[in-house]
Each structure stands twice: as C-alpha cells, then as structure tokens.
Length: 161
Image 1: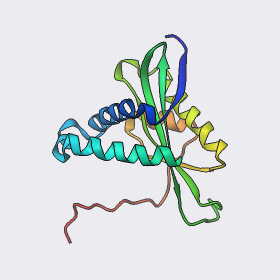
Image 2 (image 1 turned 30 degrees about the vertical axis):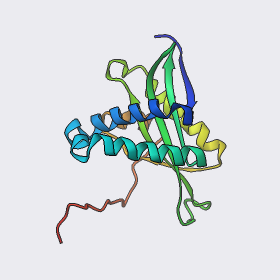
Image 3 (image 1 turned 90 degrees about the horizontal axis):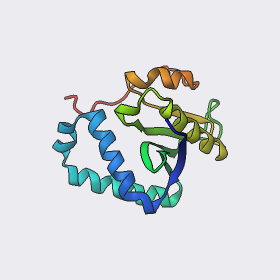
Image 4 (image 1 turned 90 degrees about the vertical axis):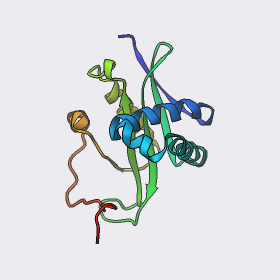
C-alpha cells in the first residue's frame, strides 16, 4: 500500500463528509435502523450539524487518502463540561466516525487517522479525549493509549417507566 495522507476536510467537502458519515452510520447501526429514521432526514441533519460545527471550529473532520482515493475518515467533536480535578479546563474532545473501508482494514489506517486527530486535539490544549468503540476497534484504541472509563452509564430512551 502506498503512503497514507491525512487531510482536514472543510465546508467545501461537506458532500463527501456526509456520504462517508452515512456509510459509517449504516455499518454501525445497520441499514435498516438508518432507513427507519429516514435516510433523507438523517442526511439533512448531518449536513446542518457539519455546516454549523465546522464553521465554528467545534468539529474537525478528516480523510485518509492513498493516492487520489479516500480510504478512511475520522472526526472529533469539541465539547465543554464543568471543570473538575481530572479536567481542569472543562474542554473535552469526543472522537467519532473513525472508519476505514473493510477491504483496507488491518493496515494501520485507523491508527494513522486517530493519531492525526489526537495531534490536532493537543494543538488546541484539550486533554480529555474519549470515544465509544466497537469490539473490532477496541484493541487499536487500547494500543494508542485509551483505557476503559469507570462508572459510566447511558440513559435508554426506550425504557418504559
């Protein structure tokens, strides 16, 4: 495989960013789940998110490219939380949309994308970086220095009271 280059995507790349996002969502949640919400509705919501967040600097999107071919992507959402001893600035970064096409997985492309995003995050003096992972991505993130978070839960909107 030729050298992998990472480049930051901008507003001009919004169509490509959105197409990759839809591909990621279909793989993570399944095509049926994406379709049940309404593909057009979900696409429009993602476009609106990218337009606002990219222009305000609250999101960084990037692509991995080999030659002229885009082969992977990644993103980070910057957020604020109450300052605490483990995060005195209150600034945090949520890694998301880390994705490499199936036929190219296992070539360290995902690691290259994540390392590039971590460097961009550090340039902004953000020290709390977190993510959600699939089973297939767990070992890669662990090798890059991520550890399990303790005492975390998520609210299930589908639970009946």
